[in-house]
Length: 296
Image 1: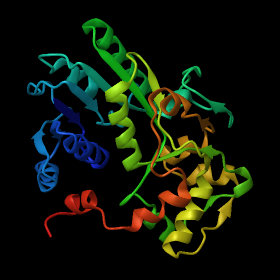
Image 2 (image 1 turned 180 degrees about the horizontal axis):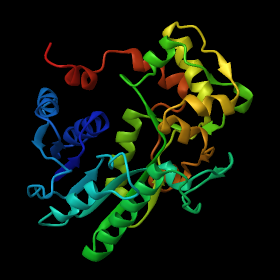
Image 3 (image 1 turned 60 degrees about the vertical axis):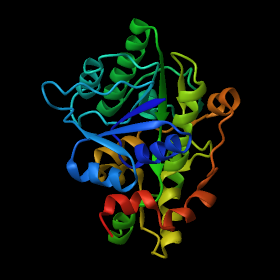
Image 4 (image 1 turned 90 degrees about the horizontal axis):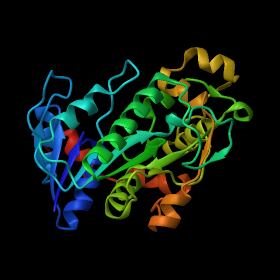
């Protein structure tokens, strides 16, 4: 078995280690030599490629292709993913594209599953929807199984909002903070592996821990874990004026993701079922974080 992970960063490396533990040969595609060196420290074979080039070198053949590279930061399409598909000499047997729950847009805090209408509200959501459609069309054209992972906020070692909390940046007051969803990085990797093993061709899977809270709740929990003061609270309208486009989109797109398709149909279970069990392990020494930090 050969697996190719395009965009083999933090989550990709966690997936690669799980694949390799099963005897699967993995090649990770990264942009820089520094990232390639980080993969090497983890024992992962690496190949560099610029997905923004006019054309990229032929990619190695693989039974499973995982596309984890993000789209560009502007526009409403994903030319990087299109480049990857064009560079494949042979189609993989299974293609897994990592998308985002932003493709659903704002659902006003409702519980939703994969049957929800796709109505992106942000350019970020439109870029991911474009890539989803490309993946499914490629699967149909080549007669292979293409699957979509719809992912909310990812947390894990090296991902806690330490600098934001230290700066004392205000949060939305608790009674106005919309619902958000999360998944631990290790659980996202295990879900990707499970979908590769048993996912249904053409299907999308919400990948979350199934325990939505709010963005403010997440930051307050992180502050308590890190022993930092709780951030000040401001009305939602005030917070939206100062937040980055990414955080703003989370606040404007309230939804509660059901993960029942992944759990009931594929038998997947998150190792970290909620923030109470998932956050403390983020402070434990982590081999992937160490690998990207550089040589000891």
